[in-house]
Amino acid sequence: MDLVAKEEDRSDHAIARFGDRLLAVLRTVRSAAILRMPYTLSRGYYFWPFAYDVADVNDLTTHERKLLAPLGRLDRLFAEGTGYLGWRAGIAPDGAWSFFVAGD
Image (tube, one colour):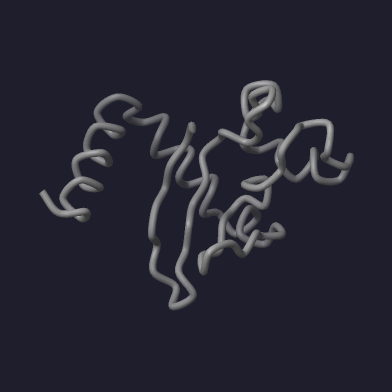
């Protein structure tokens, strides 16, 4: 099975498991307000939201906490010792959506 087929299987599984909640989160992540947030450029991809590379919730400023509020409670978005585990999108420099994932 090639990489694209594996990603399609994972996407189908996520939609089946999370259903409407997944679609609501995707709408939030791709909304204009979220995409105007600071982003992280890592390994050639742009990651939204910027919290992708934040190691600990305590590293966030008050302003950053407010920016992340539409995505959910911070205690659910960050895992101690792991960092940000909420939904995030990765976008290639050409604008192609590369992934939409949550978790580790």
